[in-house]
Length: 370
Image 1 (cartoon, rainbow, N blue to C red):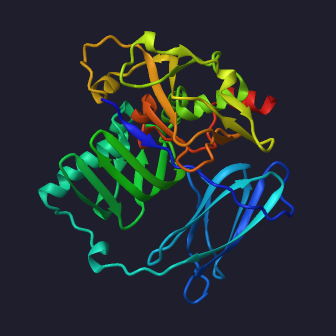
Image 2: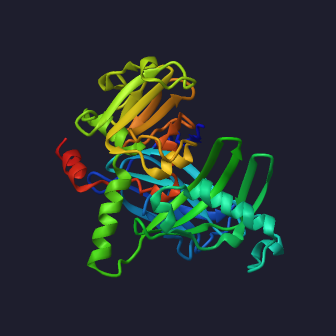
Image 3: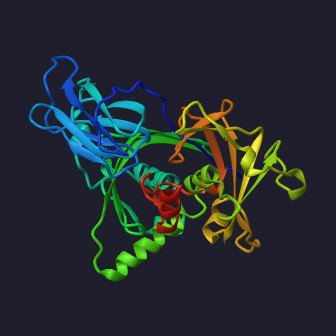
């Protein structure tokens, strides 16, 4: 059984050039009511999948300093309005100005009710949603969806759709993060799960030094072998040294070893149109083995294999949705829906998600030296 996760990616905007702190970008602008033009104080403005966020002041203005260059999605949200997003590729030493206009929306009274009692079918669908969305890794056992009452579901016969009337609040006590997740799409159709949304991370306060050390180790383990780890190692030319082996396949119908062929990692990345962009190019399916960690017992169960199966290295597969796709220097894929992933990359969901600025200490030192 295979599971699929479509990766939501970003497109480019033309930058407005001005002064910014060396090595970083600055984002500033306003958030207003699209119908009246009036400023919206207290609107949430943040960069998706990061810890960089703020709220607008009384004049609807916002400013985000010290933003790492690269591909980002700017997200603005306020109760009673439809959210707005801007996708951009940020350059260092540049100030970007955005004027975000939020359309008012009608909120049904029922959407604001917090009820402890929901029907059995809703509770059953909630449990399924949590498995599919949060994941089934060991970390998922320590993740709590704080406000499930904002969710509604629809489904049947192997299908499930979910939507939320407010941001999902997620506490991850395995990694030490609290997330606000603005869910924009969730669908399950057979064995394929597809979701999209914008998370904002906040570090939780550890209870003691032991918990802080545990979170540090768990974050390192969540990063090791992940899609972002692979992409950064490809960009740095350290793929094999960091435990990745890459192969090409024509199909996923037969996963036997004699149906794959070595795919040298240095041929997967080419120069892009700018110094901060590279082109990811391969044909068919790219198989990725991470040899530093073996498959978890939970992965055997998730993938439909016997719990007594012999464990091998973690294996994932990738497919370019519509040809070669751009990657920025932070390992972010830029083109919309540019990559579909299977296997271990798809197994690890929200419970193993890290903010995009996270780097293990060793990798951070290597990156700084380049």
